[in-house]
Image (tube, rainbow, N blue to C red; front, side):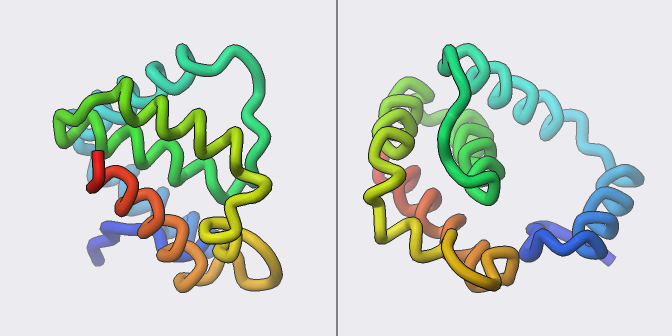
Length: 121
């Protein structure tokens, strides 16, 4: 079975995700992800105050920007604004509140929000 997107955060889904990718390591993707995490780490002096369910989207966004050879500084500027306005961003937060935030609809909503932002960069 091939898994291309983790659609839920339930532990059985996470375990299946980890097991698959443990056996199917892609070195190029690991290098891009490492670079993405390094850039994010270098861009924030202190903790980021957003819900934990948004952290994968932040990481995926930087990964995607690097993979697609887009402007990382532009993404970081967008990201800082996203974080600064996180508490009042109802368009995004509708996918972060209430029961079912680990469900496919909520995860896809968060991911689509980031996809749309990156597409417009």
